[in-house]
Image (cartoon, rainbow, N blue to C red; front, side, top):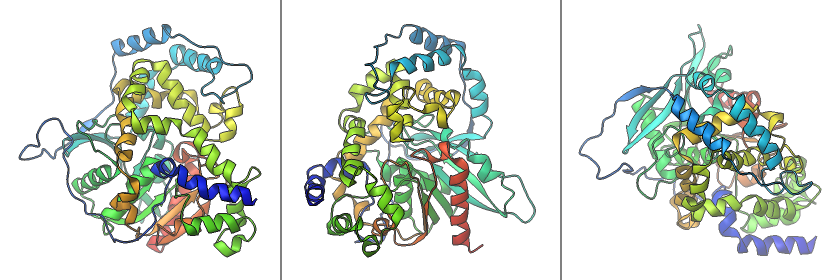
Length: 460
């Protein structure tokens, strides 16, 4: 094992730039908060005053839009897969033909639009961008307490990920319910894409704080996964007085530093000495060892990250022009990030947790809005400077925090590592099943964990 552990130390330095760009829980607590600042991301110069009206929005389509989609699908050129490869080389084109056939002949976009429009949707202009959001109020129930909650999605998801969890949060018979706001990250789906360089998670956090203020909320809860976990963490760092609690279902950390290295060296043999539980050991080391699970697997699965973090527009041209290419690019992530073992299956295990209609609805949000390239640029904006030098890398998180560790998440982060960043952890839950897209995969589990966290904070 010594050779393996030495490799951990050396490789963590060698590929630190790749691993830390997306997989981190920041370390260090030199400052207490991040200045909120200001920005302008609209076209042209910033005007003297901004229009702060909030106006209703509904998803729409046309026969011409649908026919164009069909025409492009019908002209698709496929490549035959290698024998016995499953999803190891990416999306298996044999199964892709089945998905596309369903898309072309069974999927009803107008029906799915009616589902999208069942919740009230709005737009408002913030820092020059028309920001889209869903706003769902719970029905009035005598004696029920209602708290505001913002849910933030990530890539390659959308607000549609929350359609399964929304009724569990807003239409609960519990003593507690939520008034939920789900914004689309600018550049994703129905939110306008930034027209200028530099729109990163800090800018998104500031925009979302302004959105909540515009809606009349002075304090609220936050929940996020993927990019949403980083955006909401930044929100807690910017205005902790407004964030009553932060709940995350994706945790990340740097694979470097003496504390982490020591816990990797010792944790498998003396877990209690470094604050690991038996479940931490199982998830971190498993049967394949730490390096395989936490280094080589990450390298295999982050090629997209390097592309999108350097030259997103080049690859984006192709997937923005081809609906089938877009579906393969996005759905492969829904397969692998739900469970790495899905790579061994010819169908990628996609229909084990999702329906094709649900998956294709998410694809259609990207396709009809033409937002795949702007969503990919979000990686470039967050990677163009040294992550270690960002102010949020040196700012602790002091608001009450709840952490839900799903077993099939891309990486596992023990609570002892999370404490380096999150200084006020109220709950840390080992979830029994589920992966990266928690709200989409396991809405009941996520809703229950969020509820128990909020009750602890509220002392209910």
